Image: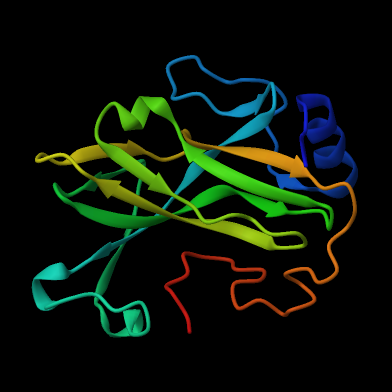
Length: 184
């Protein structure tokens, strides 16, 4: 596997609509940075969030998340409660090539506030908006900002295409349009 540089990412974004909308360069002015970077792409949060009502839960079960009540929130920002989490989605829609795997890491700006960003790998031929879990490990609420950077996607190219892609397997999160709760 090889990490792919920004010129490859820009070329694929233009030729295959790999990232839509695509920010060509690094955008920073008065914002948490986003856009193409040396070896990745810093993607943004949309303005859509799901906030769980954990007061009604004794525990969370990934096999029964449909039973948990979530409050939908839309806006220029979202407050992540102390010692809790919210679900969000990327502003960008991704289409991953068959010979590429994408790993995502949270941005240091949010890490310094106690926010842990969790995104599972984007597998070969997966496409959709990324569902992001934003965990607030601090003892006070944290504000996250819509339309601004939340995590960096690092693109890894394999020496050969995979035998069975996410699309071939008809993955359960393929082409997700909104924030997707866990499915079994």
